[in-house]
Amino acid sequence: MNSANDKHADLKLMQRIAAGEESAVVELYDRFGSLVYRLAYQAMPSRDEAEDAVQEVFVRLWKTADRYDPARAALVTWVLLITRRHLVDRLRRSQSRIKPVKMNEEFRPPIAEPVDGESIENEERFASLMEKIATLPELQRTVVMRAYLGGQTLRQIGEELDTPIGTVKSALSRALVRLRECSGVEESVS
Image 1 (cartoon, rainbow, N blue to C red):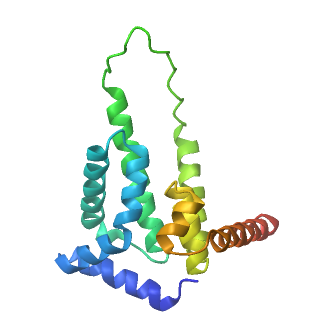
Image 2: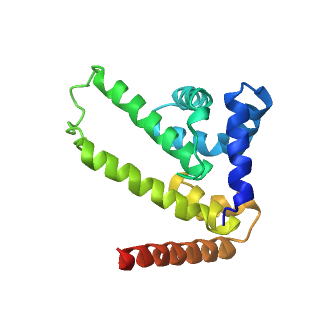
């Protein structure tokens, strides 16, 4: 669970970034660079575009560092929201360009964009989910983030963490139970 000290440390980090402290930007990148890259790599059509997107996300984080408010969202949630918004914007821009189509390619109609109300609601749900994920124990949080946001298989996660796959599966299962319980509590209160 994020403690008051963690939130204070996150706020101090973002204040240092807003003040132009280069080492703070490096620290932010060390913490979230691989996660942002995984999301960008999944969304972008090429590795080069994913790398460009990551660079642009961190520039955006640097430029908006003074707006970070730990009372509204955990730092990981804020980073992921900015990443998601940037990737969506970038994909929309690239889809607006005319693309050559081969005569033998199957036509697929574009996916309908959500109207503004849906988009805002989805972002709020995403932010709420990220806050709940941030409260999970470290292994559970890592497995959920890598499996669902990073698109990794449980085997890949186990290999990267040097953890038996059974432990990874158990951590994911326990995390999903805890997340469902959090959602159930909120729904019954409403």
